[in-house]
Length: 279
Image (cartoon, rainbow, N blue to C red):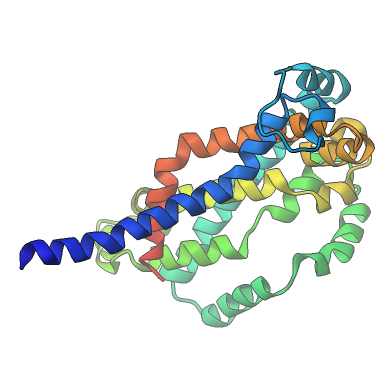
């Protein structure tokens, strides 16, 4: 009886694992094809019949991209913007989350509902008035103009509020009895407990900021201020006849994202599982 039961429970699990493996291969195939195509001559990328592996591996695509594009300056600009956005988002979201989760004040629920409602508004709607504001403040072609509009995240505030709500009030009350101020409670009690949620929000904010294309395209006109997505967009449009070089350029832009995820994968998975329990 036990053997039959174990067999019937293992068979569905085998099919589930098989399905997940096939789905993973389907999703990762475009990236693998892009990576391999970056080592092909351009003529082989669009050749018919299709060849997955190159007949001759070459690094000329990367060499031409690095000689043609200001990749180093693009990396510096993107890192400055993305890192600054991550720090500001973590600071604003964690403090606002603590405010809405544990502190009582008049209009708290209405204000939080207003923040949640902003998630339903497409960000493209606010681009024109935001551009006029940034332009009047003379912040175009400036790091501040790229960073400040993304310094706060409604999603981040919601995520932090949901996570902090699960922290027992007894910990906060005990800290208050010991004479701790709200700032000390936030710094010494709340922050150490929300590290998994902060890691998730930090990684997501970095990815969103690194991949941002529309806003830098609008506010940046000087070449020395362009971020990697803008440089890549101009290059792939101008060099459409050379897909091998385009694949190499895309790979160079994606590499930092893979490095960040590889280093923080454990914290990301842990944070996603723990924050998911709070919904």
